[in-house]
Amino acid sequence: MSTQGLFTHIDHVGIAVRDLDEAIAFYEEKYGMRMAHREINEEQGVAEAMMEVGDSSSCIQLLAPLNEKSTIAKFIDKSGVGIQQMAYRVENIDEVCETLKERGLRLLYPEPKRGTAGSRINFIHPKDAGGVLVELVEPNPEGH
Ligand code: MC0
Image 1 (cartoon, rainbow, N blue to C red):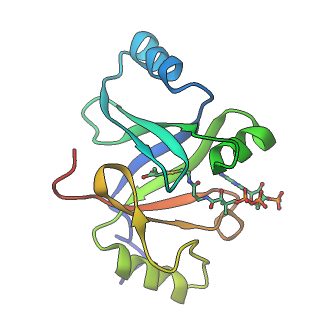
Image 2: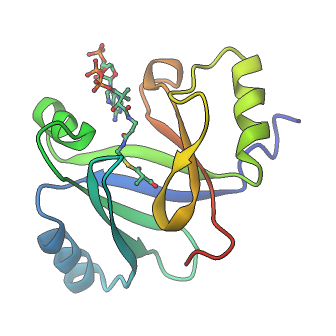
């Protein structure tokens, strides 16, 4: 797999928020963004909403913690609210993870987990990615 073409789009930028409903209202009322999708992901410990950025197919993902053990709660405690992750869309997450591992980067999960709307996701450790938590997203073809 070539260096070019590992990622196809910016899928979303994830923002840690304290209150999901308040954050959705802010993005709708101040920026005129439309909510494409909303769900609770127990495994990830988040309540989340995808806000569309025009017709770009990229979104802002609002992430609120479900409890104090959530990675989002830990992030807010340490860094405050704000950008928590950068998510790139990929066509084949298994191939991309193998390539990244060959290139010496640590993936957080041995196998992809379930992300938004049935997507398959994994993360590159922020310490291996210039201080950025990078998410890889293979969308669910049946998803939003
Ligand atoms: C931690 N660090 C970060 C960071 N979180 N750096 C940049 N961005 C972040 N978001 C840094 C810390 O400052 C620390 O640096 C070092 O990484 C280790 O942090 P830690 O506090 O010891 O470790 P933890 O326990 O906070 O874990 C960090 C880790 C965790 C990235 C492993 O947050 C994780 O597993 N994240 C992946 C899952 C996730 O984020 N889920 C929520 C979104 P220093 O220099 O102090 O050592 S769910 C989602 O996104 C789904 C729904 C989807 O999109 O479909």
